[in-house]
Length: 369
Image 1 (cartoon, helix red, strand yellow):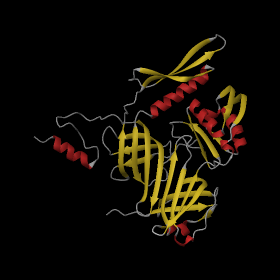
Image 2 (cartoon, rainbow, N blue to C red):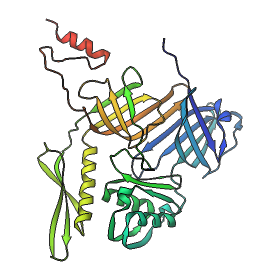
Image 3 (cartoon, rainbow, N blue to C red):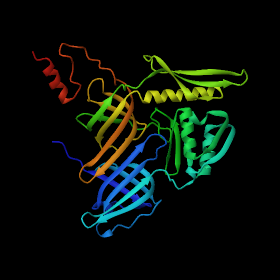
Image 4 (cartoon, rainbow, N blue to C red):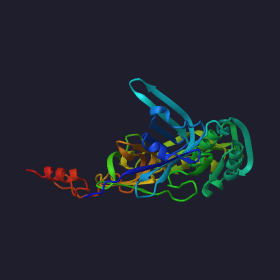
């Protein structure tokens, strides 16, 4: 008989543990970790009968860890409180909601700025731009070494500048609690450059439900092209990066660049975007604090042709008193066996069951008569 696990949480506000105070009052915790510029968000809903909870303040540091009793809890959110809201009425009782973001939107990260750097590496540029915004920056070595004659913030905020650079060099830019990261996109790399933990979603173990396609109907491209201008020859040129072999048409970027290396970076970034969007969907699993945006998710036992590796685009952690702890994943970029059903065709239309209970029944039904 399977042992039923009990979900657990740990919350600190302003560096003070408040889990014991929240325990009997907590209704729900939601945390969303998304790839790219979008800040991570958190929401806590509490029963506020009698108003016994000390009211948190805006910009108080908030950290949330989730997991299971008897195991290690993992930090799923680290940021600052953005809003505290009280609701109540004669018929509905009192509730207190706390919302937070990983990026401090009251800081200089949203201040528009004019600034340029000459003959500099991307690592040095991001360090300097982050210093002005009050943010420490980690740039992966493969991106930090990119050097250009000129970099510029043209009336952009630090957030917008980081997002623009990420699109140009094929990176993923993120700000978490006054720390910014810029790492290669689609490579499962975390802030410190180490590989993110691969998540397994297996039918019969932790996979609750899925909705996946290994190949979307949107167009795929045979190559990704960026134009660049050669000032020495007064001539336009094209830099191309190969895409899907089976595709028929090329995708040409609407923006042009001033040299071949920069055009190559942008074309490579466009290819990563194309690879990411070729398929995907949603996966819901038992609560998994290690599930993070950009990590891999291995789907096992859904069915042949669907099983495979997908890239996590966003992870939503939901803890509730009634529903326990579940993690909902939005996934993209199918890889591995996804899209390939390697079974031998039979008169019944199928081979092995692929590990799902429904598959065996379907195969049997197909062989009737």
